[in-house]
Length: 274
Image (cartoon, rainbow, N blue to C red; front, side):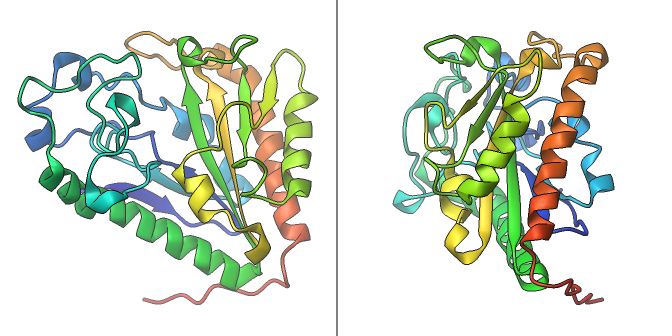
């Protein structure tokens, strides 16, 4: 089974969904807790929430495997050894609420972590890197939206949870002109709150791939799950709530596309290989 789904677009914009997957391979799931099988820390329904984006010309890259298998937004450093603790590890051993994901004695060791890097992490990132390079070659510019969501209870902002968090690795992963334009889209929205680079420098994808000096721009957008879904199991998508959120996201992605065309170098075409 592929570890990702990819749909190319027709603009310089690509949307990455590294935490939307829910699959747990049988050989991994057998050693996991019942809670882990519910994959509660998934970025639920983001592919559905953004399903308007292909009509705007944006490409899609979405993980199929759960972030509990391996976190595609973590750095596979130290020769594949897990970095951090619990939920912050490359291969998490705990949930965001610090509850165990594995039965006693079944936690992945260094050999298993390296196997998962080879099997799941590298294929996703090879595709991501290749598509950004293809967009840069075709248009002269590549723009990546790294899309995420977070539970209301997991938002630790000092002034309470924000509905939209725009993250640009401390203003280094994208042109400030782009990030300010995007934040204006969020800040001018009624009924929703927004923050810019609120509490962290962003995940691995934003920090690693964002090279605005080379015309590769990455922004990370985190959406409060309470704005579009039920945050408790079975994590139901709420069309009534999403109806208010989707227009904001459409304006956001439209601004990405418009900015990317403004900074494209001609309308060069991708070469198709069959």
